[in-house]
Amino acid sequence: MTESNFYKKIKKKWKSISFIRIENRALLGTPDCLCQNSNGTFFTLELKVTKGNPVALSPHQCAFHMKHKKNTFILVASSLDPELVRLFPGSRILELVNLGINGAGPPLGEGLDACESVLVGL
Image (cartoon, rainbow, N blue to C red; front, side, top):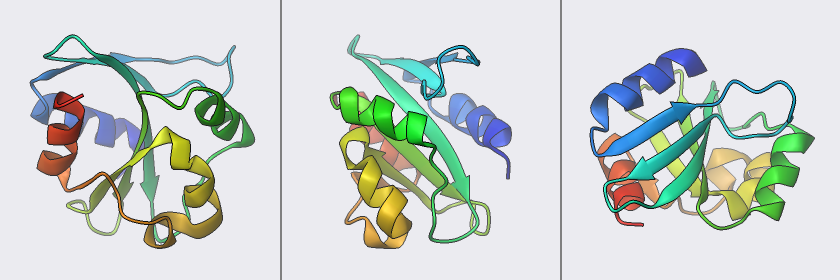
């Protein structure tokens, strides 16, 4: 699964969240999506697809999430198991970089439905 396919999958499934895909080469590190839930709360979502434990995040992405810690999230999917999706707060980006998805501590949600519930509840 590619990040593009991952985006299409969540956009189709998560009807209670409005997505704006950000294609930005000028501001490196900007998250993939600007989103708004049904409560009117805005948040950003960085999408990552990984083949194993490591999560490839750039120094620019780390800087963004370290600076903007509120309502920023990283949604990680496994290309080996499409049902394995985990949601992490942006404030824990360094854990993901240093320890991977298995060592970063418990996610906010695991599975598409649980992750959506967390984001809808903001």
